[in-house]
Figure 1 (cartoon, helix red, strand yellow):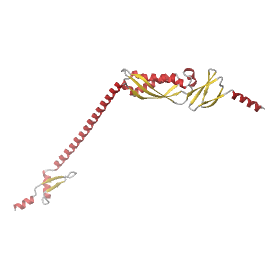
Figure 2 (cartoon, rainbow, N blue to C red; figure 1 turned 120 degrees about the vertical axis):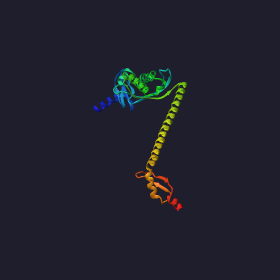
Figure 3 (cartoon, helix red, strand yellow; figure 1 turned 180 degrees about the vertical axis):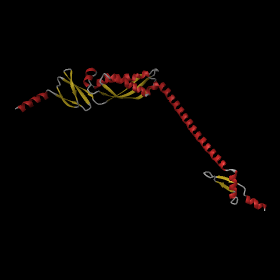
Figure 4 (cartoon, rainbow, N blue to C red; figure 1 turned 90 degrees about the horizontal axis):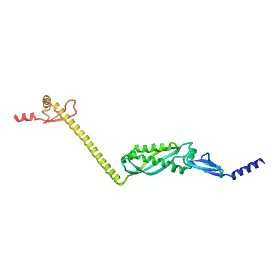
Length: 263
């Protein structure tokens, strides 16, 4: 009997309820009679369709990409394409619903876009040429973080994907880059020539030292000794100084031939 009563009660509950699904990577904010009554993780949940509403937010990292106009301090108007990775802070879903937006789409429109546009417009503190610098990217991120701070959001990363300048400015930068590239090539050529000149000088100095060593080895006394030792062995004398690795060739008169002619 009791089982039957419970079964009827469950049927009444189910009949008066409906199922709602929170997908993986989402968090639901449940609102009952216009007041926040809790959050829902991914899965199937039963709600009262007469009194309850569920508003969904992303619980995983979201990616926002946009192209915005940016005016520099030298009055160049460039189009900046930016990609921002961001999250909702844990435990902030209910506060976001109350104070910022009723769902993910509204959150992007009301909070994320505003913060990113404000970040891009920090370009006013940079010259057109410096928009590609790491400092500008840091300035964008700092501005977005400041805007996100009281909205329950957090920045994961900011990248400047593309910068499109007006044609005249783009042409000016192209010529500057070409000139800088040519200057770099010329500097590299000069450095290479300097290194080669140093090598040639070193080679000449080493050759000079070898010649000097040979000359110092061929003293008159040493030559007399070689002549006397090799006088009958031909007219070419090879001199190898003690302790030296250099061979010196010296040609002398064959005295023995001259003596035979005199006889």
